[in-house]
Length: 285
Image 1: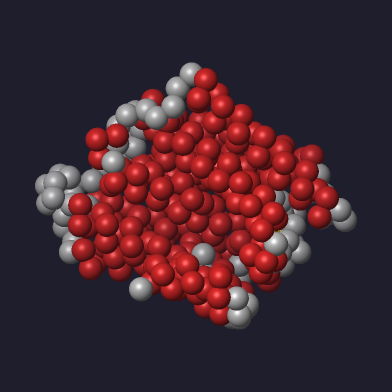
Image 2: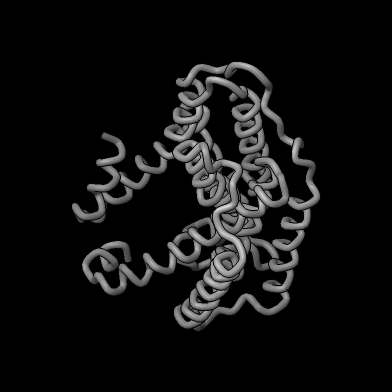
């Protein structure tokens, strides 16, 4: 499928536009909520989970469909009551941190003067929300067509929508100081921040596949993913400090992205398409 996107540009740009509309509008809206509600990173992560449920559950159905393309054996390992639970928890952590949290974090690094300023309001804010809604409808229709033999059912979709709404309400009500960094200088070196960031991806998203291969009870990776993600993120955030921490923030960001680039490179080599491999090599080098 990835090769097809590169070889057939119209399809590639169609999916590119869909991804930009989905991820871009999601990041902008959650950043606006963070600023307007005067909330901290704990609320951002909760909103990121809500976003992940909307995208992967309501739009793409990967949280439910056992035979969805990217799910693999996690569509059967830990599948219960119509939900791919092990896949779901790892993917929601991924979206919360990488799809939503990291872009907001990087924007604050690159444009520190805009860190606490709203970017869209009025008509532009409404247009951003409409973009997300339209993109979601498009993906829902598209997935309904390609998964013509499967339908999660109204009950499961409604329940998922209610869960997503619950996470939004929790994010709104959570105190802004729920997750606080210790004042002063960073407690860790940049290398330690990079290591912590690099540990998150294999410790959470890859844990399910490893547990499935080892035939462990699915409850183990389900709970372990949540514990490890919470531990790594809270420890890193509290150790970041409030002054002279620019280098540490950059190191954490690089650490978060590096294992994904390596994983993408390994996955791309099997496709033998240099147009796919080059971007991964560019990042690593």
